[in-house]
Length: 266
Image (cartoon, rainbow, N blue to C red):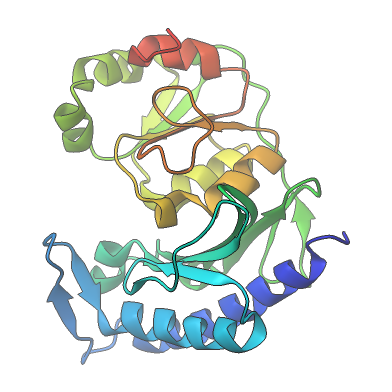
């Protein structure tokens, strides 16, 4: 790996720092939790992680822009600019309840496309990463790298399908279609957040889908899924990280799944 080697190395350093901060606050008795304007929770761990990573990036990549879930964008990003995208704790509701399925998501975008992605889930002892053109990997850290790839399942009837909450699909108007899919597929589970996508990239599940997302929720996931051989689009079928939704598959199932969901591709 040459083109993105330094960026990926920095992403691992950022993840090491985030892991240290977040794990020190995980299941702590004095964790402070507030509600954001959209009524979703934010903990002092979320803000401390993002603030610290922003400081490191400002020092190490002063010419790059930054977008984070908690503190917004550092500058108006042009189409050809480089931008780091951070979700300090994806799965905050899990984090504040003591559920270990949460992660820090770190991505680098060039223009409107994510080219480096790293997901670090320290409570699970697991990390996933990828850079465009160089494959996807998983392990405990950068020194423990195993290549990963999606499954070869070719029929929805044989697929393990992962999805977000059913209430989101109901609000999207596709609940009946999703329920039909879940009734006919081989297995279904709602792992949620980043985890379903990482299981997809490892070949453990075959489909992951969510009807409502922000850029910081998906930017780090896209390079990992696609470099593992999968397909990642929004519900309209576009490969657009700003599409506001996500349909990720092992590639073989994508067209059939889009038809099942009643999307523009169907």
